[in-house]
Length: 57
Image (cartoon, rainbow, N blue to C red; front, side, top):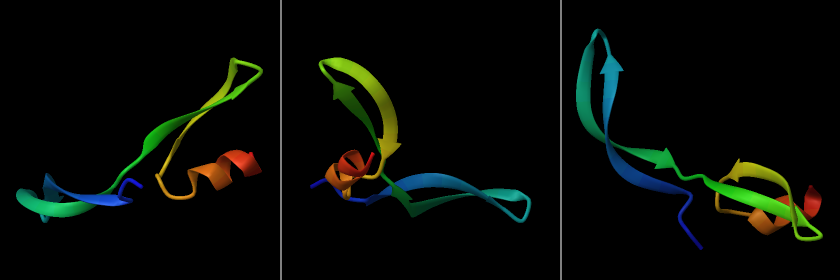
């Protein structure tokens, strides 16, 4: 399973200035649901519980 969050270097704007820091960000992936071989919907989701999301959709 892919991680839900990863560490990345980012620029954060705080108190009137940019800071170069490492921070946790959420990972998201496109999930396409097909019915009878045709694309029905594409959503963006975190990698955890994708199967549950599709079944519940």
